[in-house]
Length: 316
Image (cartoon, one colour):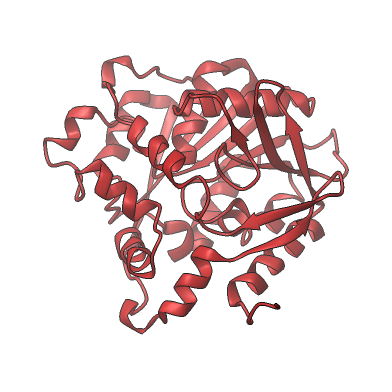
C-alpha cells in the first residue's frame, strides 16, 4: 500500500538533492571491526582545496543538520559529512558508547578515504566528538569549531544545578524524542523563540519522527533512510548517558589547535557558562562568539550569522 503524502519525505529528498548538486555522494565504509560508517564524500576530490569534516549532533540526520549550508561549503572545501555510529546506516556491534570511540571511528573513516589533514566543525554532541578527535589525533586536525558542546562539563554539574534538566534519563527522553509531545518539548528546549508549539500539528511531528524511505547508496543498493530517531533509540540514550560519566575538568585534555567556540546566548541544553569555561580551559588558542537572542539550535535560529562566523574562521 502506498504511503500518504509526507512533507518530511519531500524535504529530505530536497536536502539529498542539495548534497548531490553540491558535488557529494553517499558511501558506506566497513571498518572491519563490526563497525560500518556512512559518509557523504566529494564525488571528485580537488587536492588544491583543504578538507573539512562536518560532525552532526543528536536529532535529525546529517542531511537536515547540514543541508542549509552545504552548498556554501563545497566551493571552498572537500567536504566530508559522516553519520555517527547509531545514526542512519552507521552502526557497530561493539559495546563502546563514548565520544572517544566515535572520534576513533571518524578518524579511521577519514583514513579509509585517504584524508590525512582536515579541519572540523562539531555541532552539539558532534562537538564532543570533534574535540575528542582533535585531542586524540592532533596532527591530523588543523582548525576546530565547537558549536554549543559542553565539553568542559563535569559530572558534579548535574547535582549542582548547572543544567535546567539535571536528570539524565529525562534529558535523554527529550533529546531522543519518540512522540510528538516530546518533539515539541525538544523544540522548546533548544530554541530561544520556538514556533507556537501548540499550533504545530501532531501528524507533522509524528511524520518527522517516523518517516523512512528507500534511497540509493553508493555502491548501489537499497537502504532505509530515517530522518529522526526511531532506530537505535536505546543506543543513542546510552551515548547521552556516557557523556558525564566520571567527567572532571582536570582530566579533559587541552587541544592546541586554533579553535572557534560558537554558543547561543540562551542555550538551555548546555548553558553559556560552559562556553566560557571551555574558553578559559583553552586560553588564547580559542575565540568565543556568543550568538545573541538564540538558544542551543542557533544554527536554525540564526543561520546567516552562524554561516558568517564559520566561513570567516575556516576560509583563509
